[in-house]
Image 1 (cartoon, rainbow, N blue to C red):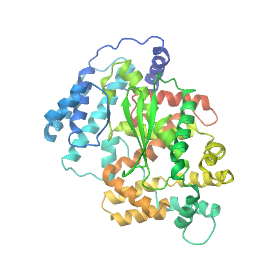
Image 2: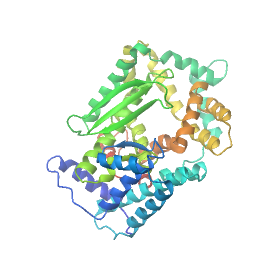
Image 3: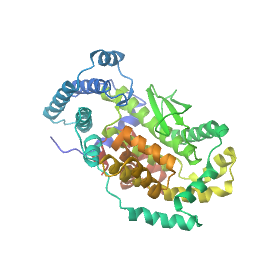
Image 4: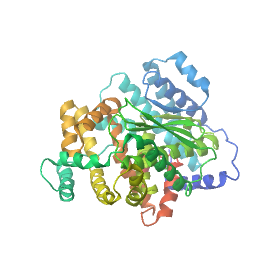
Length: 433
């Protein structure tokens, strides 16, 4: 198998992105099309055993119906996934860079699917082994001393008596969005994120995000991509929602996050190139590290002026004191540095080193979150397990990838360009390093 040069392939892809709008070539068949179809059907079949596995599907309806009707046993799925992986490995080495990149992507996705099947059959892996098998990445360990250094900085910003977690929670209560303001605040942030994103990333006519408020979920926000450049974004209101979440959801779930990522993959890889593997999104797969990492990094890309936007637009809309925006953002940036505490709590809990209560207490102690939010997060560990690494490790990998290519904060146009290329590509986590 020839060595891949993702940067070269990505440059070729960008030529397609900028040129296809004028003249989209007819998709041509190649040797990868058949294993790609088999991969899609495997994802749909695994979804019959794991209802959260298929995050989105907008391919042939008959394939989804076939998966429901057959309900292939896990043992057979293991055999079929191994066969698809072998087929991909034994194909002649592609001479075209984009085809080579496509095969690399399919190999990674199929290997992850096989690992998911093994887990569903009862195989036990450690936290790090599981994240490597599913997402192609392992999150580095972060000692408590690292979090305590951030705590010391927060102590200076929010001096007072009593435990720091209690002081953080008391401070944050000032910035809870009133329930009657939730939808207008979120819609305003989403529309502004859309306006800014469209100034840098061409999107198809008719693309849209629909916002819906829900309850009873383990997550705070979710994008359900529906195909044809449409997304349903849901906001869970089980717990009070802080004002920064409006900006974060506007960017992460919508623009230039999950919605834009899915739109660009559908438009450039599925519709224009005919790569059917991009008609399905397997949640527990390497693609999710790219998706979550780029969505979190996208917050900084689209809102580099987050403090000013909160102060001048969202704080007044929510009935909050704009003079408090500066301190709120400074505290928020420090709290973001504690994100890896989520991984440590999940690692300890899933590896059997922490009880549920100990994992919750760890999050309160080091992540500085409330007991209620910590308990909700541990419940999410039960549901999604090692998925948590995709948010923090994924974000950091995307940031380094973009900055190595000149997309720094002081070069915003270049940052948007590299970011757009990444969102339109079939890269794997290993390509970000």
